[in-house]
Length: 111
Length: 116
Image (cartoon, rainbow over all chains, first blue to last red; front, top):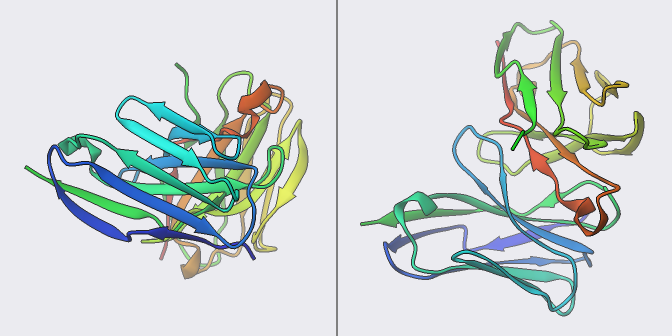
């Protein structure tokens, strides 16, 4: 089945630093989505990407849909303590079809 | 803005019992998805419904069944519960007829199921 490899697995950064994480797939996806999940809560949609090469921003977050359609990255600029959580990439291949999730990146921010 | 509602938020059951999880999608959303997330794992797709018809199926055990009702809410029925069924169960919804955003899935807060 499809696999999404997400890296890094975890990261410790200082407040104010920029963060980068990425996802790679063995298969092509039509849509890439980035979610943030706090412990015991549901994933919250951050950014959705629909076209190869698309670069989209949402506040301090920027994400790109890779040209090959097999990868995506997420950047967070000037991190703040509330950025702490687990970030998941997710992709799907059809219309209203299931999401395949990445393995997650656990972000911890120190003051 | 209204979000996805799930009930109950927490559920404790014994082995071999049954459980019913409920999901109320965002108003006007027509597609519902169910995911299971084990400790330290990423969410795994179980099943989805569009306009009350099953639209996709993942690794859902035969002991589980689900349906979507005329008011678009959905229920996940789980029978003969096993210890391994302990997990967070999420419902997500999307609007298929929503143009470019049709693949944006919005998740509920989840139901934490504990099987003893």
